[in-house]
Structures are given as C-alpha cells and as structure tokens.
Amino acid sequence: GNSVTQMEGPVTLSEEAFLTINCTYTATGYPSLFWYVQYPGEGLQLLLKATKADDKGSNKGFEATYRKETTSFHLEKGSVQVSDSAVYFCALSDQKGYSTLTFGKGTMLLVSP
Amino acid sequence: KAGVTQTPRYLIKTRGQQVTLSCSPISGHRSVSWYQQTPGQGLQFLFEYFSETQRNKGNFPGRFSGRQFSNSRSEMNVSTLELGDSALYLCASSFDRGSFPYEQYFGPGTRLTVT
Image (cartoon, rainbow over all chains, first blue to last red; front, side, top):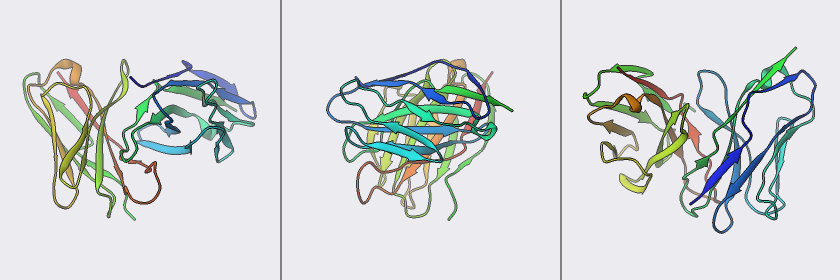
C-alpha cells in the first residue's frame, strides 16, 4: 500500500535559519505530492503541491521538488520566521479522479526569535 | 466565500455511546472526505462522499459510518464508542472539477474525547 515517511520532530530553529524537512514515499504509479501545514487549533492548509516528476512546488518561500528516482519530496525554506512555527505534513494522492490523501506523521517546527 | 465548517468543535462522550459529527463543505463543492487525527496514528482516511454516494473508504471498522445529503453536507457517525476513538476528526471538501489533483480544503475539526 501507499505510505509516507517524514522526519520526526520537533525541529527547532532560530529565525532566519535554513529549513529542510525530509519526506519519502512509497506508492504505485505516479502519485501527486503535497505539503500541508497545520497551525495550532486549526485545520490543514495546502502549502504546495507537485503532480509529476521534477516538478517544483513553491509558496510563501517554501519549496519542494518531486524526485521520482529517490521517491522524495523534501520541504525547504531559505529563511524561516517565527510565524512558520506549525506542524507540517507530507502527503500523496495516487487515485486519479479521487481526492484521498495518505499522510506522513507530521513534523513540528518551532522557530525562536 | 465561507470555508468548511464543522460542528460541534468539541465533544465529550462516554464509552459505549454513539456520536454524530457534521460537516458543511464550501459552497459548490461536491466531494467531502473525513479523516481521523490521533497522536499515535497520525492522519488516517475514513471515507469520501461524492453526490450522496460513498466513493472511497479507508480501513476502519463498521462502527464508523457516514452519509452525504443533497446539499453536500455530510455527517459521520461512530457507534459504540471506544476510548481509542478519542481524536480530532477533520472534514475536507473539494470541487472535483478541472485538473487533477483536486485541492482539498479542510475544516477546523471536531475534537472528540471518549471517557
């Protein structure tokens, strides 16, 4: 079956540090890949997505590249802010025509001033 | 445009009882999915409804059921509650038109506590 593995947190960084959160996946065919973010007390928000190999998703300074050869979709940001503190989820969708998502366990990011 | 709304936001039930959670999707969205979020298992897919029909189902026991109404609003029901059902239940809706993958918009969730 499908699965998503992401690095365990919490990841603790100082403001303006470089961020990488690793994500690898197992799926049949060619899944679409996503990063979602969850702020305290809120639901999930789509941060970025990529639908085919070598696609780069980007939003709000975050980037992730779909690497089929390494089955990875690592999240990066060059300079984090305190407001980026949240839980980040990597996810995939492999059923064309459906919206079902398979999520990783989530990585908490804590950014201090 | 109003987002996905879920009611109630918090719920406390006793083991053995049943519970019904409600989800109102974004206007015009026809697909509604439900997910369970727990610290141990993370986010797990429960089921998806589209045009009042269950289109996809996750690996949960039959105590978990759902339905969708003609206005796309959805309810999920959990019967004979167990302590392990304590979780945040998230609902997501999507438009399901245009190019795939269809973006899912999540509600704030219902926090269910079983005592």
